Length: 121
Image (tube, rainbow, N blue to C red; front, side, top):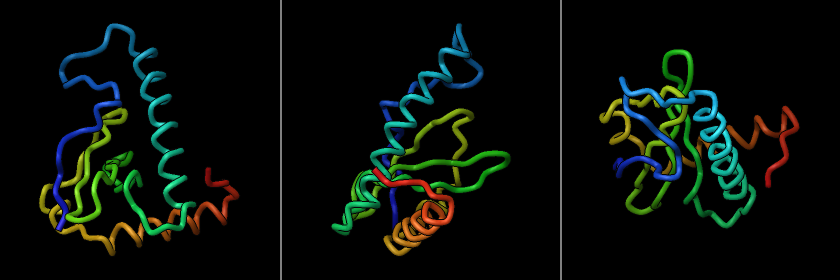
């Protein structure tokens, strides 16, 4: 059973209906942070140590994804990555997640990276 412990503090974020003065700069700043978080997630997948802390889990929502970073493995704790539209999955969905789900997503991402040639960090 997973627990949501908040949102990723590194990610620039504004709460709707507020809008940043320079939206293009805001998105560039978000993109830069997301690249760092994804690189960390790739390192976790490539490490092979069994650690999952830092891995990014993604769930399809509307026209994008809800992204969460694993903060702690036992008990499983996640934090929201409020990227772009900051989509979220339901609290019940989060509570239903477990380590098997994390490992399953890691396996699927590894397989997709192999198919499409993305190199892990």
